[in-house]
Length: 422
Image 1 (spheres, one colour):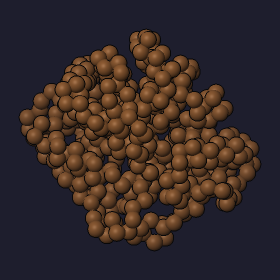
Image 2 (tube, helix red, strand yellow; image 1 turned 180 degrees about the vertical axis):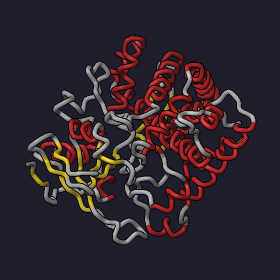
Image 3 (cartoon, rainbow, N blue to C red; image 1 turned 30 degrees about the vertical axis):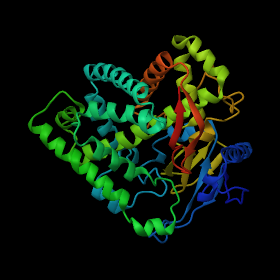
Image 4 (cartoon, rainbow, N blue to C red; image 1 turned 180 degrees about the horizontal axis):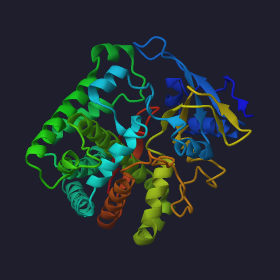
């Protein structure tokens, strides 16, 4: 029989928003201490704002093996109650529809089949051509205008424009949609002062509603007059007699934008800074882009880990690590800390080093495997490889200036701005 993990009183509290405002080195040291303990530590949580009685707590899964085990045992570690912190309220899910990240099989598998079927070889080939075209245009703009912020001028623009082109979003509403994306995601995982919460109540939800309304209208139009884009494929696909409804399309588009734009944007920004502050690795990459670019992208994703955490809910008792391991009980929560898993000394020698020749590199930057492995992993890798090739081929002296301005979020490793020059 496994051992029960009792609530502990560690020196750090991963449930306290103040932890995420600590310097990066202090947080890394705290996770290293947690990985060295014999079992996952339990952290109690405060009630979510406006939801008395919502406080419970979670077991922190910080080792690579534990995160992989939870990710690949989806029948036990459920996503359905919600993967973010705090979990989405029931009325929000009823109003906006469920994101795929908050679904379990069989519904998750059904929606994933519809989405996967829509990504035809022809669409994928067109998207890859589009990535190259957009990347070239962005670097043209950098040369012409010499902007100062890499995030707004390059890193955010590439994935946003590629996804809009892929979905068939007309040019005219794109700026408005990007504004809604920023409003919907700006406070995810971020502790806000009470004054801010009072001044703009529900701002993110209103932005999400406007964004989904725009996409639902496009979906209705594409059903009447399909074109050669992803929205048309999603609303006309017939998989097991099912296609995406307007609400499902809106939820999927929101996931694509928030997950696809935010994560790739942050990885690109972290990547430019890492290649600036590690000149030896930069010289190696520029000396042979064909040889090292793929490894550089994976090491950037491992080192920066754009998504910090997701949570799961136990559907049954489970002994983590096999018989004799840590007993987790039905109904309990766990949080998968991908950033900690990507620094696990048992898997990555010298884990804090940035080494683009690292091999193997079984990082969990796109998830720990299983049914919720990131649908956009291939797209994100392509975007990063194409943009860095374009940048370093045409502007070999491009580099970040100063430190990135980070957002103290417990959910993602967000970069608000990053100065750069060439």
